[in-house]
Image (cartoon, rainbow, N blue to C red; front, side, top):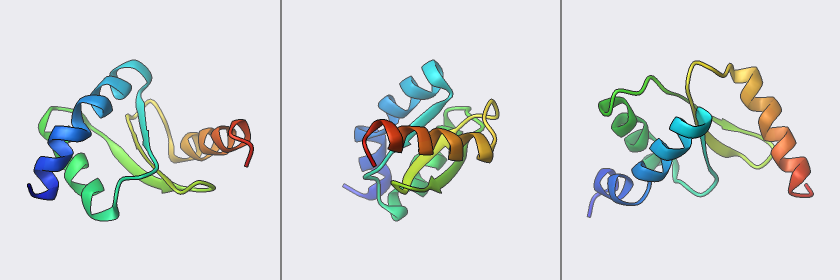
Length: 85
C-alpha cells in the first residue's frame, strides 16, 4: 500500500471528523512524507486546509481558516502544558 492509500485508509476519516467538529486535526506521529498526502486528500474532499508542524511537541496541525497560525501555536502550547511538558 502506498503512502496516499495508507493515509486514506488510516487517517482521512479521523481527520475529517476532527476538522468538522473542531476545525483542527492534530497528529503527532504522521511522517513528513505522509502529511502531504493527507493534505491532498482533504483538499480532494473539498476542505480548504492549512497545515503546520508546531512546537513544542512538533505535532502536525491541519486547520481551517477559522484559525490563524498564531492561534495554532497558542493551542499547541496549551496542549503541551496540559500534557505536562
